[in-house]
Length: 379
Image (cartoon, rainbow, N blue to C red; front, side, top):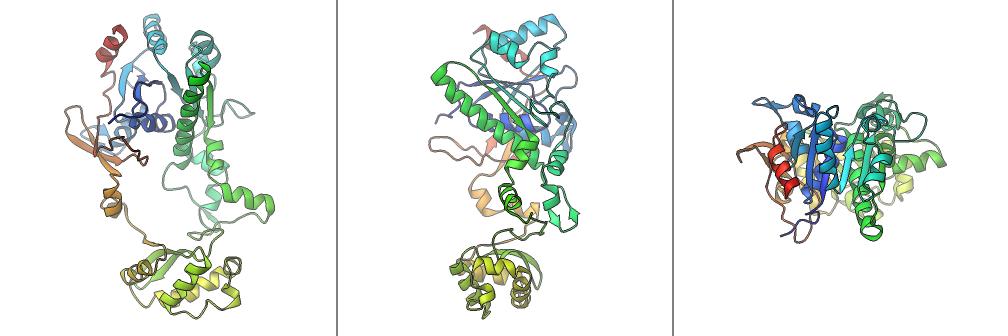
């Protein structure tokens, strides 16, 4: 089986999460990723928890299958070696603040003039343009500024998402941009600049909130409730909460039959728009039924009736979920000796003719692939 990006070489200056997540996606699809790291320290994610035997599971998860070489860009010999690597590369990825790469003579304009076929991909807090382009940022800052945090959690109690959603969105959009630029290069022979901002990426994930605010009224935090479907939220059973969703009139009618609620002909609940207007009352009426039995009872009955529903699982339960296991979404990350050491999320992109392995190659040791990279340059 062949991987679709086999033969593509990516030089990766990025660190921590947004850039490395993009290059992880591309590495899973077959690209050869060379991490350029600082001598002695490397990517700061190498020290982030969780740690096992002094190694970071966080770093291993998003840097699996990559190679590392440590270069001091203040040294002429390391700059010369880097230029040799770039001359054979297809893509450069970086996630510094605008201006940092320029100070090392590695900005877009300089490299595009020298290597016109090189795709140059940047992800930063605010992007390469605009009044705040050079401001520092983090995932939580993007979540807050894009409005995401205000709409997450219960009313009046804004919350950060449980994962670094702005960083991850930035990485996903960067990977999309890189693939589009590589496709375009086949036609034109020239590389493009790909510019992704965490703030932009976070806002791009808020499609309903943008549309709703433009029309009015602006949306508010609703806890687990979906902003445009009802019922679609967590409801209480006798032993805890679970999620159900009836996104169509037909599903709502089946829900009423399953719960033995005489609501399907009630004008307050006859349409989705009506149900949204009475969402709080609807939840109380549903819970009057669901509180009579445990979650397992309702999950079985609702599933049999074809109504979307799910338990609210802990991460320990997620790691053993039979559907996720069947889809190879929990994978082993090996160490340099081939031993299963960490677990990570698998590749959600399933493609015909592409092997979906249950174990992934090790994340690189700092400067651990110098000899291999030097031999590649001489080949």
